[in-house]
Image 1: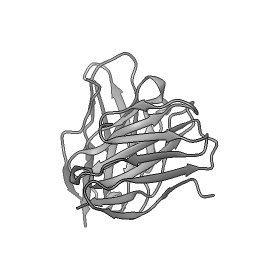
Image 2: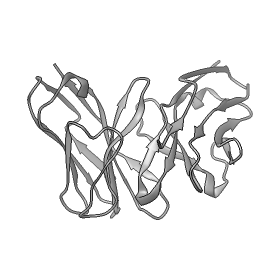
Image 3: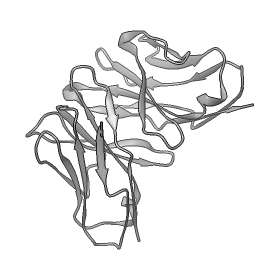
Image 4: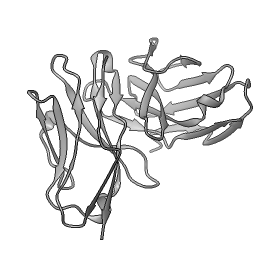
Length: 108
Length: 112
């Protein structure tokens, strides 16, 4: 079955601490992976995609094919990073599937 | 720019009633999607339309029908609503090339 797994429903860290949100995917070919974020009272929006290997708002994500993972990392969390984060994978024909999401809370 | 617009924003139905959620995008995107968002379940794909004239089932299509009316519009219909369909529904669109999805604000549906 096509699957994107986010093992942590909730994650809480203090401001300034490193944060890692985990994402694993079921192996099948060459994955196209994304991280989306939903801030309070805002629309769900793209944070970053693996193919562009970019850093957005201090976040990075590295595709590890050996571990079938695409974890999202930030070295120093900020309070404004508190949000719901979704890992997503695009399959053939533009089918896009999301994980269950991780709610990140950054405490002052 | 409106982006993705979905209506209604809120709806309460009784079991067995029918309704249609409307979605329109003004970005000339080929692909459109309907998701439902439930606590602990994340976003689950109901149906999607890779291009005008095509629709495909996602993870949870049972109890729903869709219509890709034209390139701009993609509607989701509940023929006989059930309490299990209480959820927040999101419409999204995408230019197929880069895969970025643009989402609507969501529609909160309660089925009593």
